[in-house]
Image (cartoon, rainbow, N blue to C red; front, side):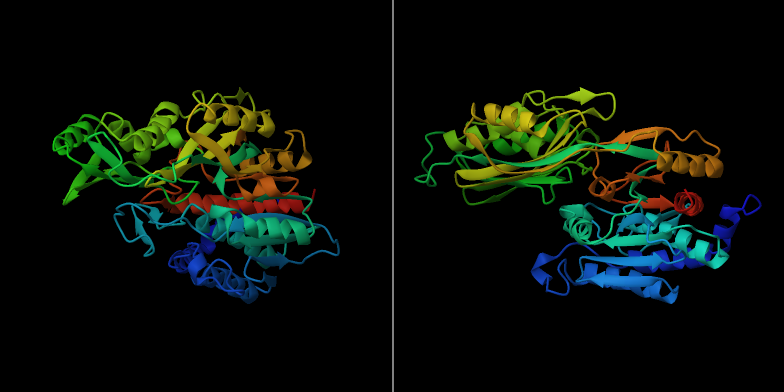
Length: 474
């Protein structure tokens, strides 16, 4: 064991690893409920990606299963024990928004980086974990427990796949999700999805406003786990100074946008910067920027009420201070709020919030304070969903095993981290997030020009090899 160089073994399979990963990355595996069937609950493309990994697993002699298209399993059965360790992966990706340098589903290596949607989230790390298990099998290293890779299909929009898995499958004694950063994330924030409903008047109709302008619609955002990159508002009325005001606003704030006109209607388009919901401060929320501008205009009463709510409670506040739900702790840091989806049409609308809260905060307290704040505006709390925080104690043997594997392969300190993101690890006991972004490296998940460094991919594979070996032999 001590004489075996895991990294050198990975290097021998570099070409095969990259080839298999490129073929997986070519599949545009975004969720498509319009094309869903009983056999393909997430749509045809995700089903194709799942089928690809199952086929690859069968070729390596692993025991496989496809559970009604919700998830797949590839298991290396090398022990008489009924216990197993698990690697929790996902093969679905978020939409490839923004202007990419190269097509997001035509993988391309430039300057040592492999660019494609899913390269780091989570197809690259998935293939690294797969090859780690494949190499352990090829090298016939002794394992006291079986090793199971789970291929999820709905991680980016609800995690229904692993929730289903958790209900019907045996739980692992230990495991990790290669879907975050190194060294080890042993604590994850809780997550709340809250729909703030605007109390519009049923009698509202176009032209009712006594002001110069009426807000007809305001829309932004597609996914709750992303900062909205674009926002659009449609106005009607007589105010010919808007175009100049808007152009001055976007120029002064270094934003991008434009106005289109059609008879008495003005459509304002504004572009921000997309980012993951767990770090809303790393993006530019296009909806907040557009609402902030619109609040300077003489709008109708309902339109102004909707936009003022957005501007007063969310603009330049990522931590829920204005909502009065702010909280922080030493384990996971501060609560964050991402207003992710906006919809307003003729006096009715909603704002969908994605809230990430620390492990010591309480969901009921956040809900109560949120309700209290909304009561001061023309809003009420509609649908609300909660996912509790996740925390694995730092003294657990599985944590020590992962730290040992990371330190031996990198010669770096295996510091324990926390995260605002939610990975599959939070849905199963005894699991943590483990890689694959290395300390100091850029996290490009959910961004345009997403990439994984080829060298980091190889290094992660060797770390996963050793981690699986240690976990399976605890």
